[in-house]
Structure formats: structure tokens, C-alpha cells
Length: 377
Image (cartoon, rainbow, N blue to C red; front, top):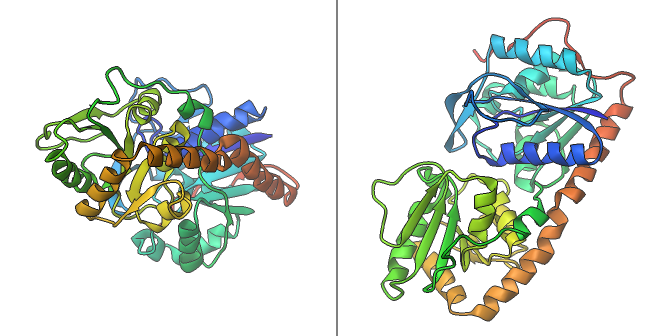
């Protein structure tokens, strides 16, 4: 099968959707399929896999409580059409066509077997409100719609009047399980870990830092590893900022901590960092968000804390630090639960959707007769 994947966000900037597209592409290649990915790339010197096609650099656009880096417009539409024509794909897979992205351009400029995956839970999206009618017309061209979570599916149903099959994000369980701890970690006095954009409020680092400060009052040797882009005005004692890290370094972080903490305050449709941490065997304390609760099996595979409440997080973290048995139990539960999300399982489910889409057409993916850039006026 010849598959075209469209990434809305830059390949060289860490993020959940990009990680999903990257791992899906690798899984499809491993299963023997031909894959081409078109994606923005911001770094001209970035080393890319041979199947990634550059689609230009991005511009920052506020979206869903954060700043997304997107590429859009007539020039991008031309690049997408050229890629579609050259690719002669059996099926086209668009990711997040509900953003001002390459996926939206591909949706308007292609026909034939097409599948879309919706990643975000964003019931108040201005873009969806503006484009509800034109998007509904274009979505009729899709032969398969995937939502990564019930929250993402709810967004589709409420805004676009459609429905979707639920196929969760995947994780390379073997990769994260095989990571080695960073030199000198875990810390003798206890170690916590955080992964996410440091200066993005909804990732909740400020909540964790408040909890960490209160814990340090009675645990002065406790340390915190923080990985992710962005900076802090000042770095508290006991906190180590790693900055933006490679996948290998991230896997090592999960193996370097006694407790991994996900203090996110909202806007999450899934929780890929939780899957990664579980695959690595890290005990977890996470915000009691609906998306996180589902991933953690209603708390069976991780401790849940009140959203945005530093004292609740401090209590949850302390209870795990004081109970090696409880940490071992959560680690075992996480490893068991995460196997359902391994890419060896998820990729096959996606392929079934592809096969259904292809069966509904007599030919492959082609460009629309005329180039289209959606008018948002």
C-alpha cells in the first residue's frame, strides 16, 4: 500500500501530533508499506528520514490554549498538490485538518481514498466555528475518520456533525522500556520528572514547582528533572532543566525518576507522555483530567491529583515516595495497561481504516481540478 501522511506541525519541533505521525510512518514502513510524509520543517539543517518531504517553514498561531506553528496559504497549497500528484497514493491520511494546516489544504485539494485523524479536544475552537459549514462539505470527501480519544470524538460530533472510530495514540513500548537512567539519577533523596513546554501554562509546571517547594521543606534532597522547550525566570534549588531533548534522552528521563508528574491543567485530549512513562515503568502522579483518567484506567495505573492544586500533588507525590511497594504496583499496572497502545497494535487498526477507504474507490488519490486555498473571511 502506498500511503501519504500529512503532518500539520513542524517535523523538527517536539509535539504529540508530530510524534504520532512519526511513529505511525515508521510502523507502516516496518509492516512493508510505502510511505511519504509532507510536513513543515523550520530548521533548514534538520536531518530528515528519506520519506519526509519539506513543505516550508511555519508561523506561530495561537490555538487551543497554546501556540501552534503552522504553514498555510496558496504557496503551501501548491506544494501539497505537487506532492499529491507525484505520490500516486492509494490512501491519504490527514492529521488535524481542524487547524490552519497542510492537512486542511490537502482536504480541499485532493479527492479519492482519504482518512483524517482528529487529535484535539477543543469545544470552543474559533476555527471550527468559522469553518463549520465549509468543513462539513469537505469532510464528506473522507472515507474514514479517526479520533484519538472520546474527547476528540466529542469535538467532531458537536462541531462537525460527523462521527469517528476511536483509535488511540500509540507508543513504542520496547523503545521506552529499554532506556537507561541518566548518570547520577535517580537522586538519593528522591527524584521527580516532568516533560512538556516549560513556559506553556496549561502544561502545569508552575503547579508542580509549588508542590515541589513544599515537599523540599521536609525533603531537602528531593530533586526535579524538567525536559522541554522554554525557560523559567529563575531555576529553583533542586531543579535541573534539560531543555528540549531527544527521544533517547526523554526515555532516559522516565527511567531516572522515582515519580513522573503530569500536572497539566486542561486542553488535553489524550496523554501520550503518560503512555511513555508507563512503558518506561515510571510511577505516575497526574492531573485528574478526563483524558488522563482514561489513559490511567481510572487511577489503576497512576495516582490522580486535583487539577491545578499544588497541595493535592504534593500529597500524591509524598505518598508514592514513602511507599516503594505502591510505586512497584503502579509500575507493574502501567506496563500491563500500555501494551494495548503499542504501535504494533495501533498501526494495524489504522490499516483497517485505510482498507475500508480504498475499497470505496476505484482509483487512488488525485488532485482536485483547481487549486483551492480555504477562504476564512
